[in-house]
Image 1 (cartoon, each protein chain N blue to C red):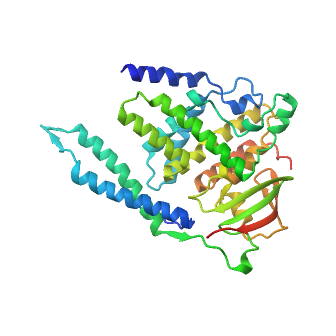
Image 2: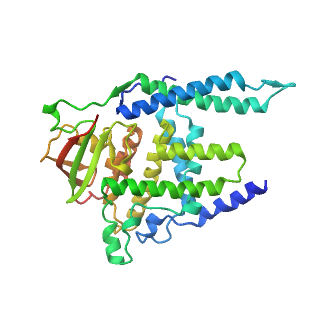
Length: 159
Length: 213
């Protein structure tokens, strides 16, 4: 079955982390297959150690493939041009007022989203709705209870 | 075998541990942590099948089964814990909205929770056979950090199960605050399969009554 074909929006830091993970897993996989592969057959039965080894290797392989898919289909999140920095886009830090209460979000791609840390995915309903809006504008989310997000400030802090 | 037996006795405690999120909302006879694990595992399996993109279903089922084991010792930590009050009226007011914190506080709360749960898990699995111990730990880290596609998907399924339970409690008692759950859903979920699932939830629970704006 083919891997999902989608673009992964990454910060420079996340890209570096994933590249490092990929490299170390590939090196690890190579060393495991050369040095540690147990014999397939133990007398006439399959060697259980080989089965367990294969299971581990297939998990490792699937992570390597997942990383390769991301690295081959990624797009780096960059600061927008000066004239577009008044609009919410990927990488924007947004100060909002939600039903009168303040909150701050960082708009990220799906791989870096972590709402517990205020990192909101650009593919979530709120992330999607905020994109392209400017300071002073209001975004209404009605899914299904109406909540108003008033945009107070937009900053880009990417290096 | 003795170590496995002791481990099974310890995790059995989750069958009798009520989920604190419901306790603070005054839910009568709230579900236990093990009851949440039961349904979230089936949801992870069946909704994972909907993904149709090389999902490792066995991994996601195992992840679901172990994701809350740490709570045997760490307890069930809720986002409201740092602002809880003994004043019952104020408490019921508090749970009407989703708690919002500064970036600094948010980071601190996430780190504290991770630390507490990590040491709870370490204590629980320390005498398990090496391979099972490592597998359990790796799966938990993957879930916590959302490292793999299964980890990221399951993190959202975990929240959707609670969301579904919240709506079931609301259906029984309309005083149950549902707004924070819908607010949270719009910020938290980004998986197309799960966004579709939420739409179905909206239709199911709001077919008779339009939500008040």
